[in-house]
Length: 284
Length: 153
Image (tube, rainbow over the protein chains, first blue to last red):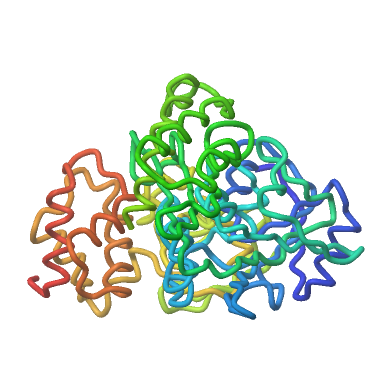
């Protein structure tokens, strides 16, 4: 690994100051499971790493006014195991439990994963389905973006140099919300998905009042399947309608061919797994 | 930088470059070569060690990030000549063949039983799936963990 200088601030102000000072030369590091791998493979060579692992107040899970607040420094495993998350935001607990292995989930953090912006990751579609928001801080202040607006390209978010994710805020799902995250894994159980789909349907008396559907692994960023949502919204749900909604999904995919499947295969599986995710959400 | 660790019960202070990986610290700075380096990308499980009781891939961990932590390696499971029940079970029930993955398998199984002393078969498989073995076909590993959990060693 190419040498760098490690800074270990203990307050957010200090961390933001270091990131502002070193600008493009600096990267924040939390668990490091993604960044260390990139640096080992010489995909990134920051001269300065700002360790967020000792910054007070960045880690932890709370509920406030019905919303779930997950500190960016919280390891995946703690989200998966948290009783409040399991009870009120079970889609998130189930999704985090599907990420890689326990070894990785013990270390990888919520904010670090999001900032890494690998479009194959499991949590972003579920966050988008639940209408989550991301809190971002820098020396200039704080701002909030919708999860679906965070991602720009492969491994690229709208975070600017000097900015860090501090928190994810997830509204409490209403009682009539049906959710599912489905991950197609033809290789191994700890792999990234060939395609993954998260759905959240508000169903009242058999009618779909609202729908949010998002997919990973089918393009440069996680994508929201708005056309599929439009097909479902306001309609009485039946198997033909679910098929019709899923049939709109391949058009929004732009996958690459790799060892998890050809581009064409992934596009077609995106349709199949969207339909299955809708069916699973409604069966739950 | 100067890093302080409690390694298998012993306080250690070592000087490492900021980019030092924990697997290299364990093997070369501390001389504990029971921990193996396999894939180097966090997938195979050979380099599994416990950091403050939680299992991690030491090949993806910077030593500098775990300053002050308690590290447990395969060498730390034996106490006064007594092997950990998981180690005894792997010996008694043939939980290994060539042995290269075994330290990682045993650390993972030990961590599982610390957190969940009576796991179901499904929980064992789910927990251990990140520790690859190219010899055993996993049945003997699964049986060894089941036996250790049952106290049948």
